[in-house]
Length: 206
Ligand code: PRP
Image (cartoon, rainbow, N blue to C red; front, side, top):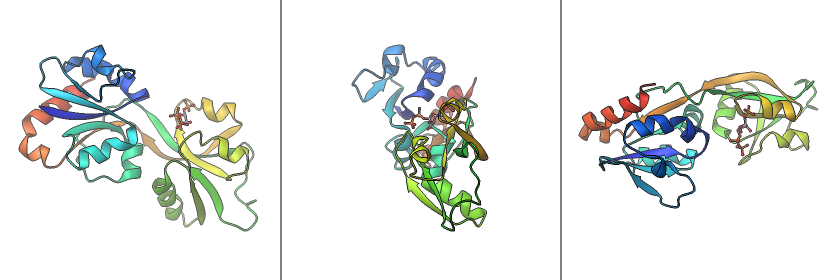
């Protein structure tokens, strides 16, 4: 049986039609259900419904053979996994954003303070520009931080831009484009290649 690590939340909704195709019915995809492992109809595959950040960990360590995750999470975690497909769903971008009218030159001679759920991505982004920054890790609702003086700007996911707009923030620059990708454990792709590849190919087909 192939084990798939799948993120709960927004991406699961977009993945549902593709998971139906490989035999996972609606009850297997129900996030309110408390079962942590769900089998498909013919029991050739099972799903682990996980917090998105945990998907690369399960796949890298072989607790799941393969999975689906946003490229943003993969970039942040730097997991040692194969990335066979870009699924072309869950499209958004990681961006630097700040209050409308913010000027980088007005940071009082101290490093720019950047709040983010993506400290590694943010650190690498500013280092590549030789900009000195202080990165502050937050677990969510990152757009709040510059509104109450915790930071000057943020690095966060922007999808529709509505959260930024409603909070008086604007994109300063794009860090990278994001979409969902498949990930596969390196050993599984040697020992179970045909079955894992077939399952991932079925998920990758639009
Ligand atoms: C994500 C992200 C932004 C928002 C962007 O947050 O962190 O806050 O979505 O979407 P938009 O551009 O369409 O408004 P999420 O809903 O995952 O919650 P979080 O802030 O707690 O991470």
